[in-house]
Amino acid sequence: MGKIKRHNQSLGRWGEDCAARYLEEKGYSIVGRNVRTPFGEIDLLAQEGSSKDLIFVEVKTRASTRFGPPEISVNKRKQEHIIATILSYFQEHPEMEEQWRVDIIAVEYKKNGEPATITHFENAIQI
Image 1 (cartoon, rainbow, N blue to C red):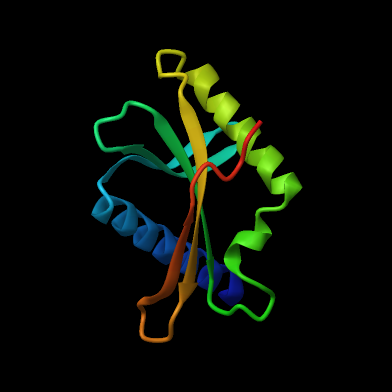
Image 2: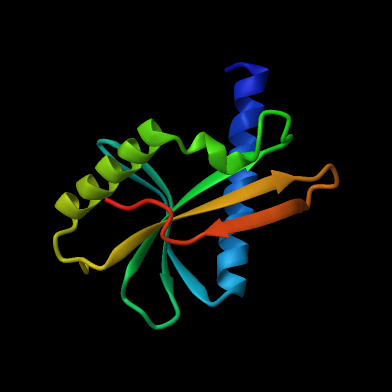
């Protein structure tokens, strides 16, 4: 595995950890991490407060904003991929509630290992 790929995977895991902590501090429960389906992976699966609604969270992390903020990488193609992954999840788990939404959490890395900013986009992708 190349050095850049390992760095990107490490940065991605760090961003997911930051996003999970952020959500928990806001009263969410993390009910799944890196949930795999045949169509892809769901970074975080959460529930808000006492709600049974599922929140599928796509986490995007960048060490630099030279190419724009993290959230711009969730383009139309990526959105379609996320929806296919969610629909596959529901095929595997028909017992789950049908109320759901997709959130995006953008995390920017700061040199000292702390997030520079965490931006939460609720209900960011709709079908």
